[in-house]
Length: 393
Image (tube, rainbow, N blue to C red):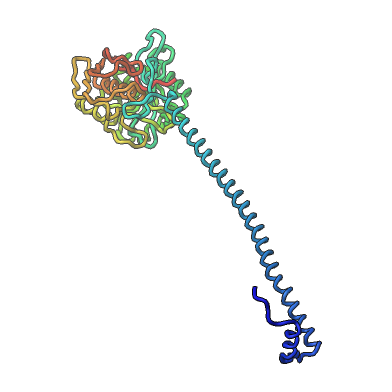
C-alpha cells in the first residue's frame, strides 16, 4: 500500500481552511425535529402489530370454520348413511312382504289361469237346492217371497220339516214362515193373515180361502203366480179359490177366478238373485217362459243386472251343443270353456239343473269337462235335478 503524503498537521490545517458550516436553527427547533423522528420510528410498529393481530385472528377463524365444516360433513355423512340404512330396511321389509304374500297359501281360494282369486269349494259343499229327502219322516215347505224393488220375480225358499199330511200344509207353511227371518234376506213375505190353505177335492188339489178384506185380493202382485210357485214343488195339480167359504175370489188384476191349474213345467230360466252383498244368493225363475231349453239356458248367461237380479251362469261356461235324450239333458262343453271348482260354477250348475227341471228333465249330463267335480257334483255321472230350490234352515 502506498504511504500517504499528508501528515497530521497538514490535514488539520486543511480542515481549518474549509468554509464554516453553521446550523442556524435554535435549540428548541432542533429538539422538536428529533422528537418527530423518534415518533416516526415508533409508528412503524403499529401497522406491523395490526397486521400480525389480523393474521392471528384469521388463523383462529379459519381453524374454527374448518372444525365446523368437518362436523357438518360428518353429520351429513351420518344422515346419508342413516337414510340409506332406512331405505335398505324399508326395501327389505317390502321384499319380505312380497315373498310372504307369494309363499303364503291363500285361505280364500286358489288362483285361476288368469291369476284371479277363485272361491273354491270342496266335495262336501252343500248345494243351495234340495236334492233328497227322507219321505218317511220329512216334508217340504216352499215359501214364496218377493223383493219390493222388483215384484216381477218371486223367490221360492224351501224348508225341510217333520212329515205332515196334505191337509196340514197351510198351518205348516204359516208356521215355517213365522220362524223365518225374512228381513235378514232383504225380502218381503206374503200377508197370509186370515188365509186358510186346506186340502181340496182330492189329494192333488189345494183350496185357498180368502177373507173378504184380504190385502192379497187388492194387491198389485200376481198373487196366483206366487201360490203356483209355492205349490208346484208339492206334487199339487190344481188350486181352487174361495172367499169366506164361498167358491171363487175376486183378484185385482185378473178378476173373478175359481181355480188355476198348476203347470209343473213352466219352461222358465233360473237366474241369480241377491238383495245385497251381505245377503245369501238364491236362484229364481224368470217371469217369462221359453219354447226351447237352449233359449232358456242362454238367458241364464245373458240376464241383465238390476234390482238384485243377475245372470247365474258365467260367460266362460261355454257349451257348443245341448240335446235331450228322453228325460236326460246333455250339455256338451266347448274346448275353450272354463269350468272351475268354485262357488260361482256350483251355482251355475244348479241354475242349469233347475232350468232343466222346469222343462221336464230328470237328469243332466255335462260332457267334455276338464274337471271331475264341482263341489259335491260328480261330473262323471248324470246329475239328478233338484226337488226344490233355495233351501234355508
